[in-house]
Image (cartoon, rainbow, N blue to C red; front, side, top):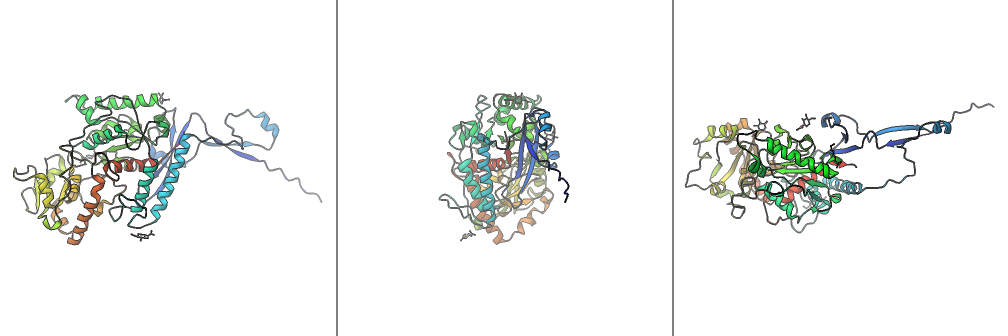
Length: 484
Ligand SMILES: *[C@@H]1O[C@H](CO)[C@@H](O)[C@H](O)[C@H]1NC(C)=O
Ligand SMILES: *[C@@H]1O[C@H](CO)[C@@H](O)[C@H](O)[C@H]1NC(C)=O
Ligand SMILES: *[C@@H]1O[C@H](CO)[C@@H](O)[C@H](O)[C@H]1NC(C)=O
Ligand SMILES: *[C@@H]1O[C@H](CO)[C@@H](O)[C@H](O)[C@H]1NC(C)=O
């Protein structure tokens, strides 16, 4: 019997071409908040050498691929010999050498996995042991996932602070005033007692230690092109660190962060497109209408430290000893306050709204006498009143548009605050009166519970505002995967 000669199956191997026209930076993005929605999004950023012109949006719609896939015919040895040698071929048995970055990324992958597992346990109380504090209750989006993530951060997170730059503009910042969180954070990183590493190869994120508040103080010439000198300084700084170190170019800034509480913080970052679009920006002015992106940027609480100390600010009477329904005192900054004052100033004893507090009333005691404290945006979205209210155990009422409150990645703000849309300012009293006594008591109790996450300690204590800010940065870093 004659059988047709079966054609020999051309055997082909798949060669992963890792190096194409230039090194590719491949970054996978995940939306890694601790909320109910979690999804992997893959993103490939353009090549290092060429121009970085593809927008993140465009890229997100493309399928993820690690370089190009080439197929080499293996059926005929003659054919193979005649083809030119390729510098990209990887032989089958070759063992991949892991870089230090690969190892860091592997550790992060493990942490992601364990946080995802912890998120499956929908328990109001964390099941992890902790002698300092066990997160529990509805103030958290997921108490167990948060606690797991916090513990992973303590184990793994390392921050490298660039040495470049001189005080007063770099390595320095205001530790009092309305911008105190900027200076406090920079000074804490400078001291280096927490998370800081001197070895950049060990770092998971890189800190750009400039202070926009100090730049405004030293570089701003009133009346001149206001932002320009500041924006140029930021751009020059990024130029220097990207020339002297390989890390900026490696990730196009995605594992770098800056921090500012100044209103101009966001705008100064726009002088460097990669800083604006890729880096983690930790900002008080967390206005989504000005490009604040909560999956990549971090909302920084604004804390007005008049003396540099918080003693005396914490705590307040029980709900039954708070006769005023709602209170606000502050200057007529911005259109939201205009609406608030126009509607409520000297109109109603239950809603006490002042642009100038009478001399016989102290601001702090008014906070402590009120059940709800109104926190309208001023010239920018953030208001120090949010944290003042939490310190004084007064339930905050956020009146803003496009503001992302701090720690929204971990905290469920609805559980301990009220959010009122700007258009509902006329209905303010009705909205607040509509909250039942039992609901108010729950919110008041939760405000007391959440306080610890906003307290400034010197030195920092676990779960306080310093560590929580670092935790938010850690979560953003979990969202990206960086390859050499
Ligand atoms: C949920 O929390 C309670 C204590 O608050 C604990 O007794 C219980 O074992 C937890 N459930 C799980 C699945 O861990
Ligand atoms: C990073 O990229 C910039 C611009 O492409 C280049 O000028 C610089 O030399 C690069 N830095 C390093 C350390 O290679
Ligand atoms: C950020 O990226 C978007 C989309 O590519 C671009 O339009 C915008 O100009 C970038 N922002 C800055 C400050 O460069
Ligand atoms: C937020 O940004 C938008 C766009 O720039 C601006 O119109 C708005 O006034 C800002 N909000 C506040 C409270 O400053």
